Length: 137
Image 1 (tube, rainbow, N blue to C red):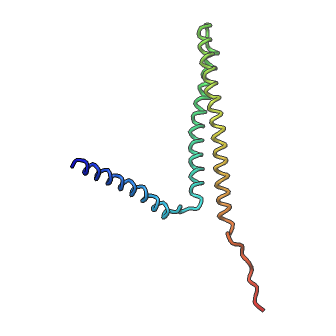
Image 2 (cartoon, one colour):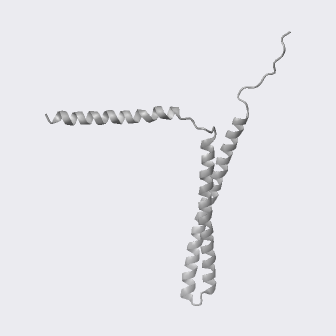
Image 3 (tube, helix red, strand yellow):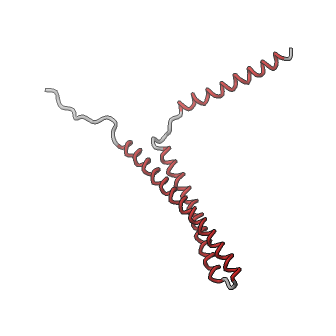
């Protein structure tokens, strides 16, 4: 007697899971992007936002290097100078890593803009060539 409620619950759960899997697929077919190049423009926007974040981090790291250089110049004792040089080396290394990330993000943005331009150009050109109509003789 106890096996049948368990089996019924498992069967119901299985049916619901298959129903939930097939429903979004049918719904996805109905949805078409309103703008033909919507995904490309979204990618460009994401890339620009990411570049803004990376640029902000780069500016912070650049300021940290500048501050560390001043600390090295102000250091009086050998112990202070050693610690300041270590901090400067660490700041330079972090800045170097951010420079690589920034360069990569600039490339991503360029590629995204290229894809968007290509899509927009494809939208502007007519799909069927227009043939001039000649009057019938």
